[in-house]
Length: 338
Ligand SMILES: [Zn+2]
Image 1 (cartoon, rainbow, N blue to C red):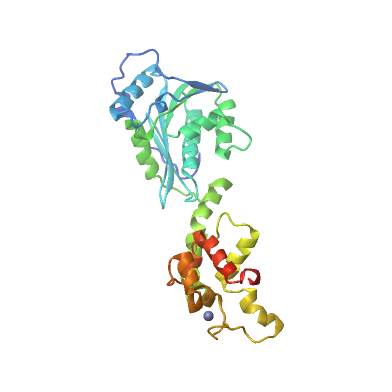
Image 2 (image 1 turned 30 degrees about the vertical axis):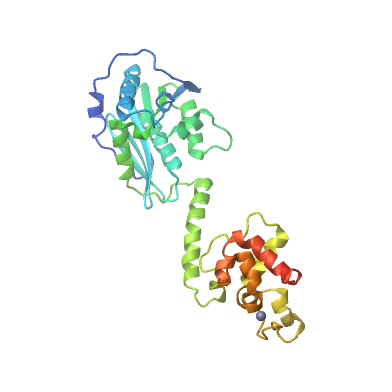
C-alpha cells in the first residue's frame, strides 16, 4: 500500500441505506466492455450533461446500483489544484487517500485512485465489487490498453489479469456532476489527501506537461530582472513572436531585426570600417532608425502600417506584422542586407 494513505470508518454507510428502486432490469444505452473477465460500464456517461438534470442522474445511478446490489460499492476520485494533487477511495467501510507530487496530472491521480481501489479489493474477503469513477478516459483506456499506455494503467490491467482475477470486479463511469453522495465523498477526500509523495514515480508525459507550463513563468521572472539588457526593450514580454507561417529566410530576417544585429548595421565590425550612417539624416544607422525613426520613411510607414508613431517593440513583438515589415525593408532596398 503506498505511503501516506489513511483509513477511516467514515465511508459509505449512509449511501448503503439509500432506497434503491427496483424499476428496470435493463438500463437504456448500457454498453459494457470486457477487460479480461472484468467489465467497464459507460451507461451513466451516455447522457448529455446539458439535457440531463442532476435528479435524473441520481435516479439513473440508483437504478444502476440496484442492478449490482450484491456487489460491494467503491468510489474513486482524483483531484488536482495549483498546490495539491490527491487520490481517494471511498468504500462502505473505509476512506483511503494518498497525496501525489504536484507534477502529477489529474489523469494520473484518477488512475492511482483506481489502483488503490484494486489493492483494497485484493486485501478484502469480498468477491463482488463495483467501482464508480468520474474518469471516463481512465475507463476507456483500461478497455483499450496498448503498449504505450500509462504505467499505472499497466499495473491495473496486470492486477485484473493476475492476483485478483477470481474476483468479480466491475467498473462504472459516473460523471462528477451527477451529484451522488459517494462521488462527493471521494472528491472531498481526494482534495484533502495528505502524505509523503516524494517517491511517487511520475510518468514522463506528466513531467513534460508540467515543465511546459512552469518553465515560461520561471524564464519570464528571470527576464523581468534583466532590465539593463539592451534586448529588454525589444522583447519586454517573452512570448512566441516568430511568424508561424514564415520560411527559414524570413525567420532569419525577423530574428536579426529583433536582435538589432544585421549585416547592414554591423558589417563594419567585421571589416574594420567606420559605422554606417543614414544617408539622409546623417545619424548612426540602426534597425530602430530604419523601422521607426527615419523621417524620410514616414510616407511608407503610413501607407503600410497606417501609422508613423510606433516603437521597435510594438512592431517586432507581433508576428502579424511580419509581411509588412518584409515589404517595408524590401521597398527601402534593405532586404538583401539583413
Ligand atoms: Zn534617416
